[in-house]
Length: 318
Image 1 (spheres, rainbow, N blue to C red):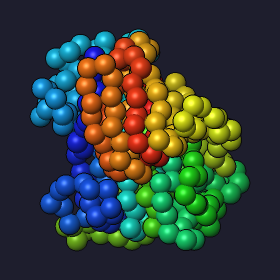
Image 2: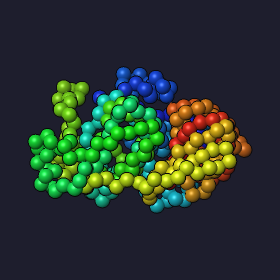
Image 3: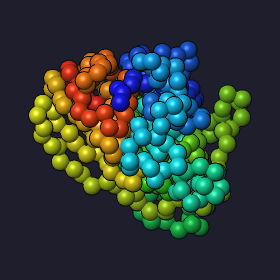
Image 4: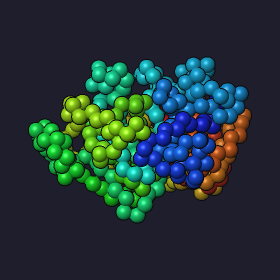
């Protein structure tokens, strides 16, 4: 089995900044680097194997070549690769938006719905995001507030700090605010319904498309359901904190002092997104170097591996 460094696809959405290139060593020619799709088998932005004999293959091609066993037994129930992991640099506010659940998305869009989690990697002082509603509202009020541009009067604005976590079930109204850098772990979907976009125009000079009628169909018109707070757990050489767990992904924040022994068992692959530090990942057969901003994929059944060097990372399994 294998430890693979991945390279991402990039998106240059109008609200993006340059921190992913300037601070996280992302190599691309885009003026804006709004998102890097770090772990992805999605057609709209695949990630690529960047180390070893399979370098240059997309992650999906690697899985096809070596078999779905590299994903682990917990992925057998999914027809497609189940998750997508991104880094998101919001220099400006994102649109107010919502994602459908699986049933609606498969029927209307032909792909999975989207439940996701945000981990605040960094943010400007006073930065805020939108997360659900202040209180429950009716469908009639939702429609009228969209029509007369007063929707933000009833949305829940939350000040954020580094390390905050937001679990966003499908149907939850949300928007990343300017000055926030996020690690997003989500279902493998690119279906987003914009409800409000601050009157902005796209590269063609026209207002960006809204999806109001679909948003009316799927939005939960109530305060968001947050994920319960979890304790920091002490291990030999590192700490871990469960950020969220659902049927699609389980994600931890790791803080490694100098060295940590981790494991990729038969149940699931392991994704490590390095947020701070420089490390070496080693098992019996190989060593991979990784630095701030790098994404590493460890195939299921690889067994124990060691992370040598101090770092902060997000670890995700299915």
